[in-house]
Image (cartoon, rainbow, N blue to C red):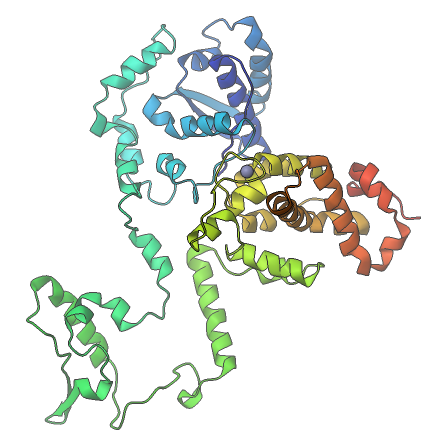
Length: 467
Ligand SMILES: [Zn+2]
């Protein structure tokens, strides 16, 4: 749903834990979740929340805020063991590495993904949590007791043991779900029956070469180079059932386009096919090319094209360049901490977060939403809010595009021209870009550019009247 990490500078772990709890509850609330379960490996925080222990005075300021905000929703705190806290530990380590705020993306950060419960196949988690030993609430020794308790749990019974084994990416296997989404509905028999294909001696044969007519009935001979093993039988039977389902006409083999009339290819039928496939794909994976999000926006063609590459994950960020064989440092250039990927660079990079925060000040809930999305697509789809005044509405609607576009340009200037990336400068450039993109709207002449620069909040809130 969402994740985040924050960097609080020097201080105690208790302070960090308290502040993280406060931020976590605020984030949940701003995302509309009111029934919140907090799992913490800090026994102290657990006890502080329920006021079972006295809170040291430097932390009272945080706990007062926690109780204030917790009073407005349903919050439960439970103590968890270190094994149950791996995702949080991982995020904390990112915060330290990053020395800033951010979020992890489980599609890119494989380590993080391993620690997550509840995504895709969290099949074994419920069963495991039932056998989880009761959290040692009566323990009064503070954090050290956690460690001892945790060590008592045998490793193969660990809360996350089973999940992380199944998700371990190291051996390069992929799960069936992945496979199903990757193989489209129009796959070949070769892809469908790989075992039979491997042992056939007629891999490139035509249909007529594999089919003979015997006593008026067509018989398939796939020219297998050996007898089938038991485990191949079922595949074979399945293939035969499929083949006998077709009526085969006499005559020579030829290519036919099965989507069009009379077997003739037409662009129209191809277009129709792609549309159907993408809507089918859409139902399975919720991913389709968001045409209206990109092509129908009021921005220059080159920017639309850039977003088209972003949507297809083909933008030449470092990770994609490395995939193509370039020898580059994988590290994100704006922050210099985390490997660069499209989502990191445009959404969750420390530097980008500062830019988003600055730009979205006028519509308060927006910034928090950023932590709940893990792709640019979702971010654009969920972009809401803004004032109904036409000027304000136009600017707000284009803002995410201009921001991403300028972050991309600033990142390139840094890499290729060595120009430092300054947040305030980038923000002004975003505003200038918005002004420029609105040039084809006649109403713009009744507003002034300088208001964008100095009265950004009022402009977006629709408080600047046209002249
Ligand atoms: Zn970064």
